[in-house]
Image (tube, rainbow, N blue to C red; front, top):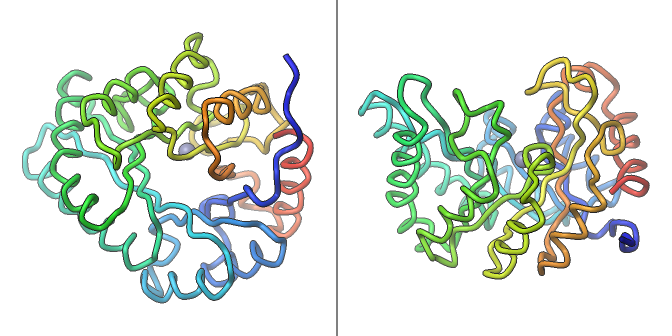
Length: 277
Ligand code: ZN
């Protein structure tokens, strides 16, 4: 199968968590200086300046505000914690609105004290509880399936099929999927489920990084594109063939790279974007 033309710079977005050591203003400045097109904002990134000022900085920079990371973490064996999780997700929608971002990414959550089925039920309930506000604000909710290695504490939604089932359940233009190559690359049904998702125009986001071999830490040892074993151009082609025309979002959690010079790191990301995406 032939791969399409190299990824377009006008579709490059970077998550603030990727350059975690940079403060918000600096991250915005550096991304814009490198002609990156979009920014996905992690909530902790603007904790000192607040979402309104952060949103203004993005607007003034010319960057596209792509999404807010993250909501979710609905399940808990403790009823009060479930209530607080919903309140926190409603607050995330307020922040998204203040920031001017059109989408909140949901890392749905899981509680090891109960079955995955119970967690999934609570995820459904949680999304149901916040959906009216998302609709009212015109903010999309993107369910991000997480690699099964995170099924203990981070998400009971582990495959594209499960995410698609959930999206089908809601049948709302405001509920779709964030496809992250790190989480779904291993799935034998990936193409089929990407096609299924694309058919309903439910691919809301596309996240990229790489799976290094060996992975030292599955959370915080993610690779730059091309550094690992994920066939990113192939997956990008599948999502684009299914109709997705949004951003290619670089989301790299890496203790290794966070310790390095962030300008050099950003240049490596740009180089990898041209050559391995
Ligand atoms: Zn992601």
